[in-house]
Image (tube, rainbow, N blue to C red; front, side, top):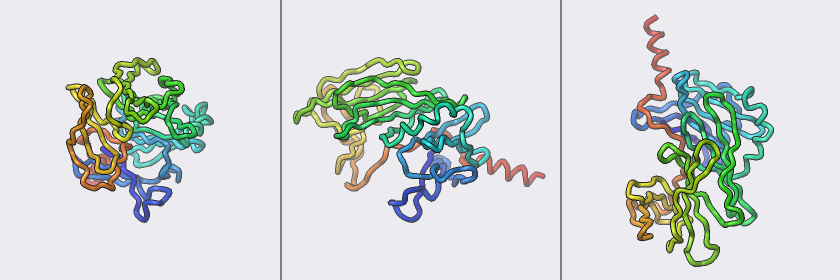
Length: 282
């Protein structure tokens, strides 16, 4: 199940015309109702989106955090939005501080949504990180500290769930023209305790435009290259070489890594179908 923003007129529009839930396995999609929403829910800002499944009411939901405007939740079952007020009241005045930053893809683990914030310095070198956690059961926000890299030049290329733990993939620059970047993999135990689990030796290849997608069983990484003519690569950490797995035939293509998805064979129209079936029976 994917949450996708649709723009009908121009790519330069400030907001999406519609949001849809699409299940490519089922070949079905649903345009979300705007009932109960705010215009900010459809803005093309870098504020976080999160798609999750609520086991308590057998429902798929979307969280949109919007700074001063608070947080909104879309319910697939009711096909409507509502503002989250009560549980986030104490945190809401501080939400605005989390914006005008760069956001990585959402991580979903144990019915909690995690958003990674990257704060850039004046030279746009990302060197400050923090995590915003949303408990989908209590609908409460919590700020979590990330590992500190002090004044090192860093970029967090990936924020992922690996072996049932939140992980950060961080590239640390050597600070000169020689490609001697270090790569570190950090694991979060609980909510805020960090352990460095892997420290790859200085690399002889330039990796600041390659973003990790998956850590393979053999220890190699499947990477997405955003360089012109890039594509999907396999990075051998021992040999420090890359092999093209899937070439990027369109040199102008850009594949954003911000898609929100859940693996499921459920149709996004399941509740509509149930409603229609019950109506026909009566």
